[in-house]
Image 1 (spheres, rainbow, N blue to C red):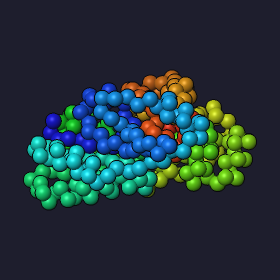
Image 2: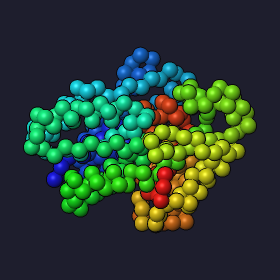
Image 3: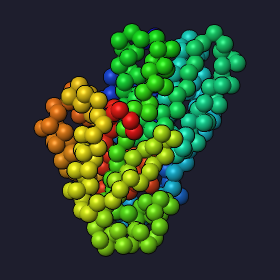
Image 4: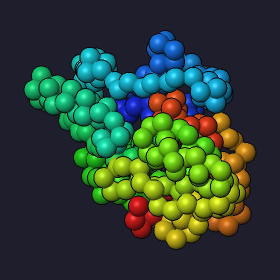
Length: 289
């Protein structure tokens, strides 16, 4: 390969895509009851159903960004092998992970001046980040240079649309995204939020609807409004232990647009710890975020 692609576990890409493209994953960490776990371990499959069961049981879950030593160790192992490196990271507005990786690479540039080293803040998360990584991997497979792929990512990252809904406002309230009053009355009235990622990479409320099905339909409506040639796209969907809801969204899109492919995967524990069980998110390229 002409260069190596490094991303982090918040990209939420399924194992077959990670393995197919030889992607390198920096794993973020989470803690349950004081015990530390990694969101991604190469060759292993995390029992995410069990993780979301713990969340439903209201167990205390905290998250931790990656360490500088972990980033440096992976990056340097590739550079020592004579590889150029493109790092594609989790939104800097949601986590310090990208900044840690970026600073590690800046130090390594001094040590390996002959290597090409790039870092891109996706301003995205979950399979929104993952979809940009996926496009980068496909461009590399098509023979594009590291400079060209870096340029494509910078040009298109604000066209990567992220649309989310959640089933339980408690988890957003616990993370400070909504007030306790909003969470209580929203739950009583069966109100579901519809959110997106803005141009700064922050999770923003857009509207609220009544009922779960209506919130899922609202995600598809956003694709209707802004998607660029959806029949020619790869559409990605993530879920927080609610596969049937993700499949409902996928079926509506498939029936209407017949896209090139639809990929469904779990929301990883680090993101899921904040969004909660019942999260469904839709990702695609659009005219604007």
